[in-house]
Length: 180
Ligand code: HEM
Ligand code: HEM
Image 1: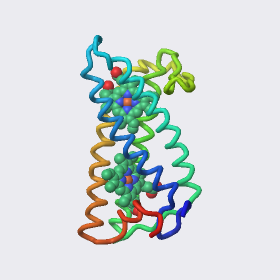
Image 2: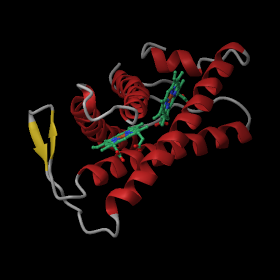
Image 3: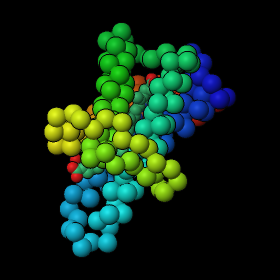
Image 4: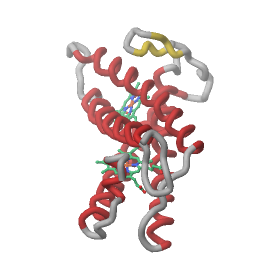
């Protein structure tokens, strides 16, 4: 139930996948919306505070997820050899983009040496502050990385729907239920 097998995802992988999917889309919408806020808007400070707090929690969850991914077996892909390779490449790219966007967000937020307060519960210290033009460079990586992540996630969701409706295999169902 909790752990993966060669035919299905366990509850831990499923929960991490969907929490992360909701957080990624939510952070993108919030991040984009933040860029339009004026200085006198009441959300001018609260928006980024939420964005950074949820982002840091997602960063920790992603580290856990990657550790779990390495420690556990993964269900075999369906489809032709080409399709299986494409699925693997797509998933690796999703992880790379996710980590890139999370780390660049951390590097923007801590570029001036300030720690990040996570909902006021605890602080994450600034570890790297001396990269050349850190905030600007990390900001570019963050923005283009976030867009690429959304485009790829969109394709990924369409692929999942195609497996369900067109190929009629259990790819989507097994990411929704650990009983399969
Ligand atoms: C997958 C997770 C994330 C997504 C999809 C995301 C998305 C975005 C987007 C679309 C923007 C607005 C565009 C921009 O100014 O670059 C933004 C801004 C920002 N994000 Fe994120 N973000 C994520 C994670 C994080 C994390 C983990 C942090 C910090 C710990 C963070 C900190 C920031 C900051 C400080 C800004 C404002 C940047 C600026 O004004 O240049 N983000 N994010
Ligand atoms: C509505 C949106 C989404 C749907 C329907 C969906 C569906 C799925 C399904 C069915 C799988 C299992 C594939 C398999 O068993 O081979 C999967 C895996 C995966 N998904 Fe999503 N997903 C969605 C959103 C996202 C988002 C936003 C991300 C971005 C981070 C993401 C990242 C991943 C990754 C990295 C895997 C591979 C898991 C692994 O092999 O470790 N998904 N997704």
